[in-house]
Length: 228
Image 1: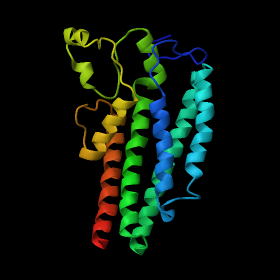
Image 2 (image 1 turned 60 degrees about the horizontal axis):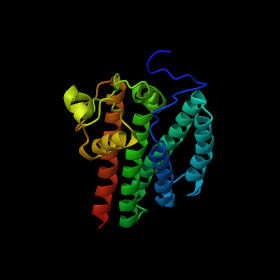
Image 3 (image 1 turned 90 degrees about the vertical axis):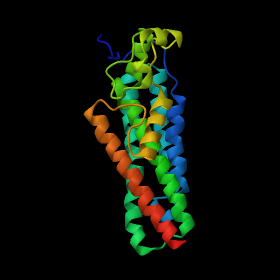
């Protein structure tokens, strides 16, 4: 097996990074969707979080049973669902603004919810796609190899070997919080901050994230302030 590949039957056996932050992030997207005004949702407010809960159960079970190939496919389904929830909410937002039916408080609440959803959705995508995803990174960690070939150059990857050893980071690998920090910075500063972007797919994703964040704040925030 090549470095970075994951056997679908056995998968990585040691050094696994925790998955619960990613699960909480997905569920938080459902909670934020619930907080949106009715006009910006598709279906009842509980629809997205219930759908995500149903999808997460087999995803977690597949990983627990060692079926990493199924776990990967189901994880992509979960991410597609949360992405569709974000896109549909933004589309409905654009359609509602000319009608001027939402109050300033609802618009401000929506701005915060959609901005937070944007951060969580893209953090989840970065975490799942970078360097083969968490299963591949687990295997590298188990083999005590460095994190290489990723789409992002994290600061820990640029430290000299002696400093890495002093910090006990010789075999450092990014985890979900690292990608969450990256996504937060992108939505806040509208550009990369501490971690340069190396791959073209990541550059395109970050441009899309920054565009959605800017559009959300500009459309909702400006409209809410105008009402006030």
